[in-house]
Image 1: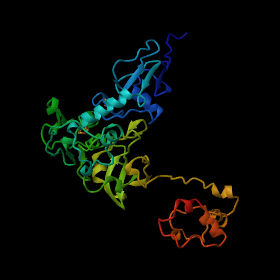
Image 2: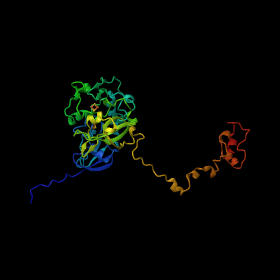
Image 3: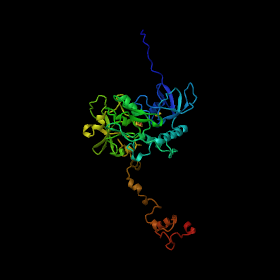
Image 4: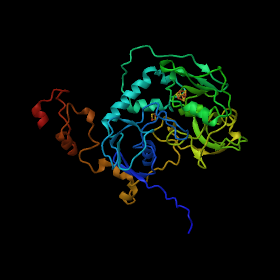
Length: 397
Ligand code: SF4
Ligand code: FES
């Protein structure tokens, strides 16, 4: 008999999030377990990005309450935990949107994130697809207690294609992980500490790596913007379509979203999934190279597949629904073939809505007598009574 030890798949663990139970592999984070259930229980994420290693734990927007730690130790966790960094235990009970403590904490997180972030959505190029804007609408309060001058920075071109507006940065580190993990070499990072901390290149304008454009896609706010697109158009005026091309770069997936206005390609981005992250193809994240992103700006460069599916709640998706299904009109069936027009001709069957009555000629509030009289072809009102002078007794009659 073979000495080989049979490796059994690890037993699944059960976790309950906002009352919905799911079985997941051990080691899964609360965030990923919630995403497996669906959008209705998934916590918001400003720094976590599942396609990049080691992300999360920076912004605290994904805080949740653990009402029971596990079956073995069902005590609640005393503090709220970052769901993107906390693994599930068998029998864990998590409260997300159902916890008042969580909602209150998220109010505070929004307030902190907006301490230095400018409220310049009307002029920001990211408006309409900004995750901080969505997070603030969903979890923020209508005021801030911060009365001091906000921290500001000068805008900087950090390469031929990208502009950094550091004032808007929320220090999520996603762009640093992109540069670290998918570009040839990272030439930017977080310099200084505390309130001086800032994204920067050591030597200005140094970012020219082939995949640097992906930093723009992962930035949840308008801190990193595409210089070939910024302020050319509002994103909700453009039409997103899925397209692909045979890219010569072996690391580029060649599948992208083109943002069109008429036939003109205004910008090219990687394709996004429902979490706002880059879509995966054949199990790998679909990053695109700078050539596809910045230089292929003609529809003839691409094979257009069709309209991109955008969630209905998004401002970008306005009037661009794919496969819009018009529900069946049940009226024909209910009316058994009789034309609805007849149903709507209520004058022929109603004794109240009598077209012989000109409502504008009735003085004062009308009453049932007015309609009865009209039905008998009588004068519907006493012409001697002046507007607003009808007595209570007359009205009662
Ligand atoms: S520039 Fe954008 S992606 Fe980079 S740390 Fe700031 S907010 Fe995050
Ligand atoms: S998404 Fe979890 S801490 Fe930022």
